[in-house]
Image (cartoon, rainbow over all chains, first blue to last red; front, side, top):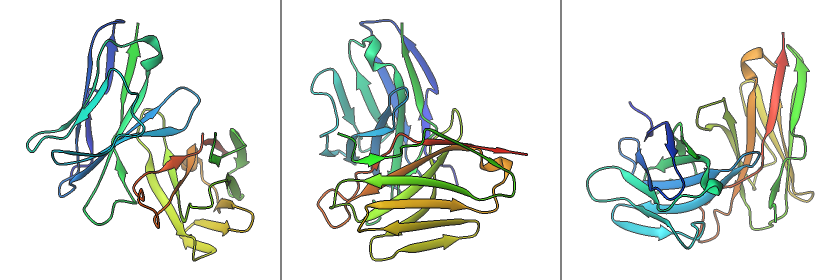
Length: 114
Length: 115
């Protein structure tokens, strides 16, 4: 029973490039959440998605960040024109329907912007 | 504005002794609290939770205590083992509200258990 799978584990991008982070939820889970952990900080909620729907994106920066969870395939967190301040660990979590208060986390993608 | 605070960045204890990790919160809408454990280069792993209708929840070596009037919770690990060495995050959510899925995390406490 595979857990939440995130790839890549590490991603290096130059300033101005695009970063795409992928998340495949646990089997049977239809809810996906993205969190960001900046250095020396706790995890901060970014966005909550269900299949083909963004439910809550209140934690997402207004510009350059977008997320999707298509009918088929993984959820994607996309960061356009990355800046140094985007360097962080990005964690995806998933939960089954009707039990969205205990989420299971993936191993994270560590984004480094150089 | 930190709604969940873990004021001790680190804690060191001897193997076999009790570890007590503390967490304070400010948002009175929070009614569900969780502890996550995180090893380096891995994602957080759920450890134990407690609903605001309880003041204690126990699971093996792990016990969480909730003091609602003080807006304080603590995680007790006894006896502590070297494998418990990790960063521990306290998290809270408002299950009674419209955003019960949203976890608010503290900054974490690094626990080191010395053999």
